[in-house]
Length: 91
Image (cartoon, rainbow, N blue to C red; front, side, top):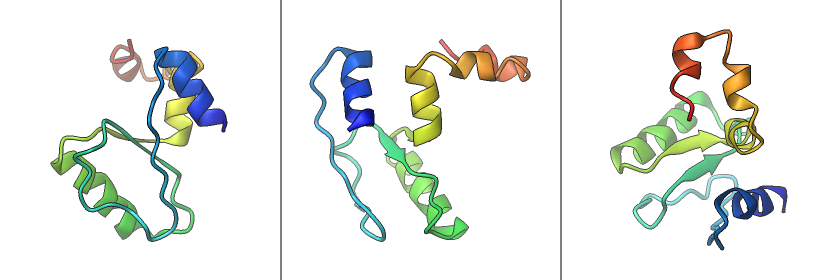
């Protein structure tokens, strides 16, 4: 519930959210504007790389909960200040 509420607050829009869990992950990501994925503790590295690459190949941005939450809470840029070249990319 926290993530949907924060997405709505941040964007000011009613957002349709689709959830999947475990091995369930759509092959076709074209209906989606963004994938916010968990850290993948129950998946192996190969599966996580595959999912990220699949999203990239389809032009769908892919991030994880931590990065999304940091961005929406306004702390991502500050947390990247130790990496100035990355902090500059955050709007």
